Every structure is written in structure tokens, then in C-alpha cells.
Image 1: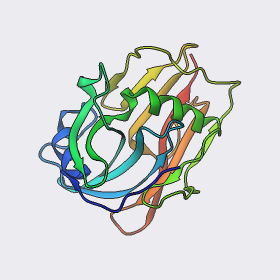
Image 2: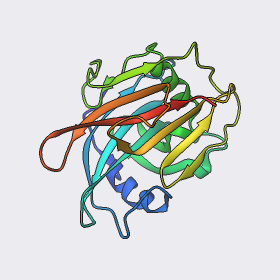
Image 3: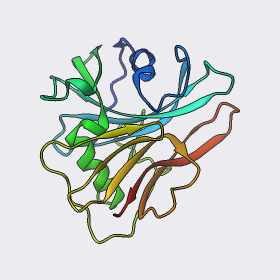
Length: 211
């Protein structure tokens, strides 16, 4: 289960993201982000080693606030071969040094996210231990998803991030959550967050597309 430790993290996750977001092709701001945590959820690692969080942050640095989705994994040691995906390192008050990665490049998050599409795992509350997040919904109309083995080619553009499964199905992470899934999607994961106007917003975080 997801165990949430009430402690300090230095630098904070938002501080790491403030430095990292401008380097991403899907970041549409023009200066230094001004980030506020708006929501998200966690996933449990079956082995209990890797922390996984889908963090939603609102950037208020521009004329209009913009919402970004950043799946992150937290590890106690560097992930071999993933230096390019490192968001940053931080010191956790209970767990010690932690390496934070862009989660789409982490095989544990990829496999667990595919299990979420199929309903084989339950999304967990972002800030409460051992509590399902019932605002996260999933759907998949296919016959089964195959987890990629070995290195995966991850592509990024202004619309988000994606990678292909062995059967050619493409998973897309919508870094700017969409109100609805793209046309032709055969699966989706949706979630909720706090909008800048004080309302509760909802959108598509990830979708699946067949060849």
C-alpha cells in the first residue's frame, strides 16, 4: 500500500519541477513556472520499492493559468540507464536520499499504469496512506495489454508523451489534461484536481490507441 510519511522533502517536488518543466517540449510557458500543487494520485509498487505519483500542478506565471500532469517515480538509488529522465534528487526526512524520475521512463510505472487501464490495480489517494482514490476512473476495450520488456523509445512533442507496446498499441500521456479522450482511443485514465477558480476540474490523463 502507499505509505505517506509526514515529513520534510528538500528540495520540494514543486521546486524540482520549477527547474525541470521549461526543458520539456510540451511546456508552453515562456519563463520560470510559478507552480501550485492542484491534485493527483499515487500507484502502489507490487514490490514496495518505488514510489509512484501522478502530480497535477498549475502554472500561474503566464496570462492564463495552465495545468500540467507530471508522473513521477521516487527511488532510493539511481535507475540505471535513465540519467536523461532524472528530474532531480532530494532528501526525504524519513527515507533519506531520493532520485525523482519522469515516470514514463520508469518500467515500474509503465507496467503499473497499464494494469490501471485494465483495472488490475487501484489508484491511491495522493496524501493519505492506504486509501483508494475513487475520483480516478479507467477504461479499456481491448483484449489485453502486453508490458514492454527492455528499453522503450519514448517520444515527446508539444502535445505530450508516448510510447508503443509490443503489439503496436500506443500509450499517450496528456501533459495538459484533456477534457475528453482523443478520437479513436480504446482506453483512458481520468482524474480530478483543483482548478484555479476554486472548482473541481476533471480530465483525461492518459489514453491508449491501436495501430
